[in-house]
Length: 291
Image (cartoon, rainbow, N blue to C red; front, side, top):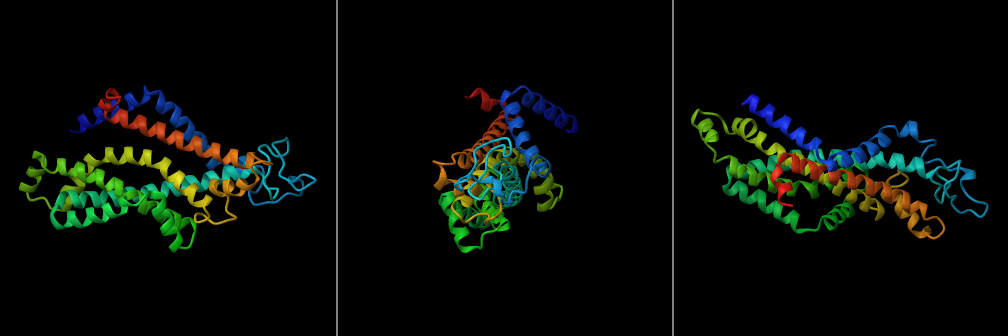
Protein backbone atom coordinates (compact mmCIF):
# COMPACT_ATOMS: atom_id res chain seq x y z
CA UNK A 1 0.00 0.00 0.00
CA UNK A 2 2.83 2.39 0.86
CA UNK A 3 4.62 1.65 -2.41
CA UNK A 4 1.39 2.19 -4.34
CA UNK A 5 0.87 5.55 -2.62
CA UNK A 6 4.43 6.61 -3.46
CA UNK A 7 3.92 5.61 -7.09
CA UNK A 8 0.70 7.62 -7.26
CA UNK A 9 2.44 10.65 -5.75
CA UNK A 10 5.26 10.44 -8.29
CA UNK A 11 2.69 10.18 -11.07
CA UNK A 12 0.89 13.27 -9.78
CA UNK A 13 4.04 15.41 -9.70
CA UNK A 14 5.08 14.16 -13.15
CA UNK A 15 1.73 15.08 -14.66
CA UNK A 16 1.70 18.44 -12.88
CA UNK A 17 5.23 19.19 -14.12
CA UNK A 18 4.13 18.68 -17.73
CA UNK A 19 1.19 21.09 -17.56
CA UNK A 20 2.02 24.64 -18.77
CA UNK A 21 -0.84 26.00 -16.67
CA UNK A 22 0.94 24.83 -13.55
CA UNK A 23 4.12 26.68 -14.54
CA UNK A 24 2.32 29.93 -15.37
CA UNK A 25 0.03 29.80 -12.33
CA UNK A 26 2.87 28.88 -9.99
CA UNK A 27 5.04 31.69 -11.37
CA UNK A 28 2.30 34.28 -10.86
CA UNK A 29 1.61 33.08 -7.31
CA UNK A 30 5.34 33.04 -6.55
CA UNK A 31 5.63 36.61 -7.86
CA UNK A 32 2.82 37.84 -5.61
CA UNK A 33 4.05 35.79 -2.66
CA UNK A 34 7.59 37.18 -2.91
CA UNK A 35 6.19 40.70 -3.12
CA UNK A 36 4.11 40.11 0.02
CA UNK A 37 6.88 38.45 2.04
CA UNK A 38 9.53 40.97 1.06
CA UNK A 39 7.29 44.03 1.24
CA UNK A 40 9.39 45.62 4.03
CA UNK A 41 12.45 45.24 1.79
CA UNK A 42 10.97 45.96 -1.64
CA UNK A 43 8.73 48.83 -0.56
CA UNK A 44 10.71 52.08 -0.61
CA UNK A 45 8.36 53.85 1.82
CA UNK A 46 5.86 53.30 4.59
CA UNK A 47 2.46 52.62 2.95
CA UNK A 48 0.78 55.11 5.31
CA UNK A 49 3.34 57.90 5.01
CA UNK A 50 2.13 61.05 3.27
CA UNK A 51 4.80 62.93 1.32
CA UNK A 52 4.71 66.64 0.67
CA UNK A 53 6.40 66.04 -2.66
CA UNK A 54 3.89 63.28 -3.44
CA UNK A 55 1.36 65.76 -4.82
CA UNK A 56 1.55 68.18 -7.70
CA UNK A 57 1.46 71.95 -7.25
CA UNK A 58 -2.33 71.86 -7.58
CA UNK A 59 -2.72 69.01 -5.11
CA UNK A 60 -3.34 66.13 -7.55
CA UNK A 61 -1.66 62.71 -7.34
CA UNK A 62 1.62 62.30 -9.21
CA UNK A 63 1.88 59.86 -12.11
CA UNK A 64 4.62 57.18 -12.16
CA UNK A 65 8.05 58.80 -12.06
CA UNK A 66 11.59 58.27 -10.87
CA UNK A 67 10.74 59.09 -7.26
CA UNK A 68 7.47 57.14 -7.07
CA UNK A 69 7.63 54.07 -9.28
CA UNK A 70 3.85 53.63 -9.72
CA UNK A 71 2.80 57.15 -8.78
CA UNK A 72 1.05 58.44 -5.68
CA UNK A 73 -2.50 58.59 -4.40
CA UNK A 74 -4.64 61.56 -3.34
CA UNK A 75 -2.79 61.83 -0.02
CA UNK A 76 0.69 61.68 -1.49
CA UNK A 77 1.30 58.06 -0.48
CA UNK A 78 3.43 55.73 -2.60
CA UNK A 79 1.24 53.37 -4.67
CA UNK A 80 4.00 50.77 -5.09
CA UNK A 81 4.49 50.46 -1.34
CA UNK A 82 0.75 50.27 -0.69
CA UNK A 83 0.34 47.56 -3.34
CA UNK A 84 3.05 45.39 -1.80
CA UNK A 85 1.62 45.69 1.70
CA UNK A 86 -1.86 45.11 0.30
CA UNK A 87 -0.62 41.74 -1.01
CA UNK A 88 0.21 40.77 2.57
CA UNK A 89 -3.37 41.40 3.69
CA UNK A 90 -4.98 39.60 0.75
CA UNK A 91 -2.77 36.51 0.94
CA UNK A 92 -2.89 36.29 4.74
CA UNK A 93 -6.66 36.61 4.91
CA UNK A 94 -7.17 34.09 2.09
CA UNK A 95 -4.68 31.62 3.55
CA UNK A 96 -6.18 31.62 7.05
CA UNK A 97 -9.77 31.56 5.74
CA UNK A 98 -9.08 28.63 3.41
CA UNK A 99 -7.31 26.64 6.13
CA UNK A 100 -10.14 27.10 8.63
CA UNK A 101 -12.80 26.50 5.97
CA UNK A 102 -11.07 23.32 4.75
CA UNK A 103 -10.84 21.93 8.29
CA UNK A 104 -14.44 22.78 9.18
CA UNK A 105 -15.87 21.79 5.79
CA UNK A 106 -14.04 18.46 5.81
CA UNK A 107 -15.22 17.69 9.34
CA UNK A 108 -18.85 18.52 8.55
CA UNK A 109 -18.75 16.56 5.30
CA UNK A 110 -17.25 13.50 6.97
CA UNK A 111 -19.78 13.48 9.81
CA UNK A 112 -22.71 13.93 7.43
CA UNK A 113 -21.53 11.30 4.97
CA UNK A 114 -20.47 8.70 7.51
CA UNK A 115 -23.41 8.77 9.91
CA UNK A 116 -26.26 9.78 7.55
CA UNK A 117 -29.68 9.85 9.24
CA UNK A 118 -30.57 12.81 11.44
CA UNK A 119 -26.97 14.06 11.61
CA UNK A 120 -26.73 14.18 7.83
CA UNK A 121 -30.11 15.90 7.57
CA UNK A 122 -29.27 18.64 10.08
CA UNK A 123 -25.78 19.35 8.76
CA UNK A 124 -26.83 19.39 5.11
CA UNK A 125 -29.83 21.62 5.73
CA UNK A 126 -27.55 24.15 7.42
CA UNK A 127 -25.23 23.83 4.43
CA UNK A 128 -28.13 24.32 2.01
CA UNK A 129 -29.20 27.50 3.80
CA UNK A 130 -25.72 28.99 3.51
CA UNK A 131 -25.38 27.92 -0.14
CA UNK A 132 -28.76 29.46 -0.96
CA UNK A 133 -27.35 32.96 -0.42
CA UNK A 134 -25.03 34.49 -3.03
CA UNK A 135 -21.56 34.61 -1.47
CA UNK A 136 -21.13 38.38 -1.70
CA UNK A 137 -24.62 39.08 -0.26
CA UNK A 138 -24.02 36.72 2.65
CA UNK A 139 -20.63 38.34 3.24
CA UNK A 140 -22.17 41.82 3.18
CA UNK A 141 -24.87 40.75 5.63
CA UNK A 142 -22.33 39.35 8.08
CA UNK A 143 -20.07 42.36 7.67
CA UNK A 144 -22.98 44.71 8.42
CA UNK A 145 -23.58 42.94 11.74
CA UNK A 146 -19.96 42.50 12.80
CA UNK A 147 -17.36 45.21 13.32
CA UNK A 148 -14.97 45.27 10.32
CA UNK A 149 -11.46 44.01 11.03
CA UNK A 150 -8.97 41.50 9.61
CA UNK A 151 -10.20 38.75 11.95
CA UNK A 152 -13.83 39.45 11.11
CA UNK A 153 -13.07 39.24 7.38
CA UNK A 154 -11.40 35.86 7.97
CA UNK A 155 -14.52 34.64 9.81
CA UNK A 156 -16.79 35.90 7.02
CA UNK A 157 -14.74 34.23 4.29
CA UNK A 158 -14.70 31.00 6.28
CA UNK A 159 -18.49 31.01 6.69
CA UNK A 160 -19.17 31.56 2.99
CA UNK A 161 -16.63 29.02 1.70
CA UNK A 162 -16.87 25.90 3.89
CA UNK A 163 -20.37 24.75 2.77
CA UNK A 164 -19.23 23.96 -0.80
CA UNK A 165 -16.36 21.81 0.48
CA UNK A 166 -18.64 20.06 2.96
CA UNK A 167 -20.88 19.00 0.07
CA UNK A 168 -17.92 17.66 -1.92
CA UNK A 169 -16.45 15.77 1.02
CA UNK A 170 -19.83 14.26 1.93
CA UNK A 171 -20.28 12.88 -1.58
CA UNK A 172 -16.81 11.34 -1.44
CA UNK A 173 -17.44 9.81 2.00
CA UNK A 174 -20.72 8.26 0.84
CA UNK A 175 -18.74 6.32 -1.77
CA UNK A 176 -15.77 5.36 0.39
CA UNK A 177 -17.77 4.15 3.41
CA UNK A 178 -19.30 1.33 1.33
CA UNK A 179 -15.98 -0.17 0.29
CA UNK A 180 -14.76 -3.52 1.54
CA UNK A 181 -11.85 -2.22 3.59
CA UNK A 182 -14.24 -0.03 5.65
CA UNK A 183 -16.43 -3.06 6.35
CA UNK A 184 -13.32 -4.97 7.37
CA UNK A 185 -12.32 -2.19 9.76
CA UNK A 186 -15.78 -2.24 11.35
CA UNK A 187 -15.70 -6.01 11.65
CA UNK A 188 -12.33 -5.85 13.40
CA UNK A 189 -13.86 -3.59 16.07
CA UNK A 190 -12.39 -0.24 14.99
CA UNK A 191 -14.13 2.82 16.45
CA UNK A 192 -15.95 5.30 14.21
CA UNK A 193 -13.42 8.05 14.90
CA UNK A 194 -10.53 5.79 13.95
CA UNK A 195 -12.24 4.71 10.73
CA UNK A 196 -13.08 8.27 9.71
CA UNK A 197 -9.67 9.80 10.33
CA UNK A 198 -7.41 6.88 9.34
CA UNK A 199 -9.38 5.17 6.57
CA UNK A 200 -11.81 7.70 5.09
CA UNK A 201 -10.01 11.04 5.54
CA UNK A 202 -7.05 10.12 3.27
CA UNK A 203 -9.52 9.53 0.42
CA UNK A 204 -10.90 13.07 0.76
CA UNK A 205 -7.53 14.85 0.73
CA UNK A 206 -7.41 15.17 -3.06
CA UNK A 207 -10.84 16.82 -3.12
CA UNK A 208 -9.76 19.26 -0.42
CA UNK A 209 -6.48 20.12 -2.17
CA UNK A 210 -8.21 20.94 -5.45
CA UNK A 211 -10.90 22.92 -3.66
CA UNK A 212 -8.37 24.98 -1.66
CA UNK A 213 -6.30 25.92 -4.72
CA UNK A 214 -9.40 27.02 -6.61
CA UNK A 215 -10.98 28.72 -3.59
CA UNK A 216 -8.01 31.04 -3.06
CA UNK A 217 -8.98 33.12 -6.09
CA UNK A 218 -12.57 33.62 -4.90
CA UNK A 219 -11.54 34.56 -1.36
CA UNK A 220 -9.12 37.18 -2.71
CA UNK A 221 -11.94 38.64 -4.80
CA UNK A 222 -14.46 38.64 -1.94
CA UNK A 223 -11.97 40.25 0.45
CA UNK A 224 -11.22 42.96 -2.10
CA UNK A 225 -14.94 43.48 -2.73
CA UNK A 226 -15.69 43.89 0.97
CA UNK A 227 -12.86 46.39 1.39
CA UNK A 228 -14.02 48.26 -1.70
CA UNK A 229 -17.54 48.52 -0.28
CA UNK A 230 -16.21 49.76 3.07
CA UNK A 231 -17.17 46.72 5.17
CA UNK A 232 -13.90 44.80 4.96
CA UNK A 233 -10.49 45.61 6.38
CA UNK A 234 -10.90 49.17 7.70
CA UNK A 235 -8.87 52.18 6.66
CA UNK A 236 -6.11 53.26 6.80
CA UNK A 237 -4.82 49.69 6.37
CA UNK A 238 -3.54 49.22 2.84
CA UNK A 239 -5.61 46.67 0.91
CA UNK A 240 -6.27 46.36 -2.79
CA UNK A 241 -10.00 46.90 -2.30
CA UNK A 242 -9.44 50.05 -0.26
CA UNK A 243 -7.04 51.37 -2.90
CA UNK A 244 -9.60 50.90 -5.67
CA UNK A 245 -12.30 52.53 -3.55
CA UNK A 246 -10.10 55.57 -2.94
CA UNK A 247 -9.26 55.86 -6.62
CA UNK A 248 -12.75 55.47 -8.10
CA UNK A 249 -13.59 59.17 -7.73
CA UNK A 250 -10.25 60.18 -9.24
CA UNK A 251 -9.99 57.81 -12.17
CA UNK A 252 -9.89 60.68 -14.66
CA UNK A 253 -6.97 62.54 -13.12
CA UNK A 254 -5.16 59.53 -11.60
CA UNK A 255 -6.14 56.27 -13.38
CA UNK A 256 -3.09 54.49 -11.92
CA UNK A 257 -4.78 54.55 -8.50
CA UNK A 258 -7.29 52.02 -9.85
CA UNK A 259 -5.17 50.33 -12.49
CA UNK A 260 -2.34 49.15 -10.20
CA UNK A 261 -4.40 47.32 -7.53
CA UNK A 262 -6.72 45.93 -10.20
CA UNK A 263 -3.78 44.37 -12.05
CA UNK A 264 -2.53 42.93 -8.75
CA UNK A 265 -5.92 41.28 -8.15
CA UNK A 266 -6.02 39.93 -11.71
CA UNK A 267 -2.53 38.44 -11.45
CA UNK A 268 -3.31 36.79 -8.11
CA UNK A 269 -6.66 35.30 -9.09
CA UNK A 270 -5.36 34.18 -12.48
CA UNK A 271 -2.41 32.45 -10.85
CA UNK A 272 -4.54 30.51 -8.37
CA UNK A 273 -7.11 29.58 -11.03
CA UNK A 274 -4.45 28.26 -13.40
CA UNK A 275 -2.67 26.32 -10.67
CA UNK A 276 -5.91 24.91 -9.28
CA UNK A 277 -6.99 23.79 -12.73
CA UNK A 278 -3.61 22.12 -13.27
CA UNK A 279 -3.73 20.37 -9.89
CA UNK A 280 -7.19 19.03 -10.68
CA UNK A 281 -6.03 17.63 -14.03
CA UNK A 282 -2.88 16.15 -12.50
CA UNK A 283 -4.86 14.37 -9.78
CA UNK A 284 -7.46 13.03 -12.21
CA UNK A 285 -6.14 12.96 -15.82
CA UNK A 286 -9.62 12.00 -17.07
CA UNK A 287 -10.82 15.56 -16.47
CA UNK A 288 -8.31 16.94 -18.99
CA UNK A 289 -9.38 14.35 -21.56
CA UNK A 290 -13.01 15.39 -21.24
CA UNK A 291 -12.26 19.03 -22.14
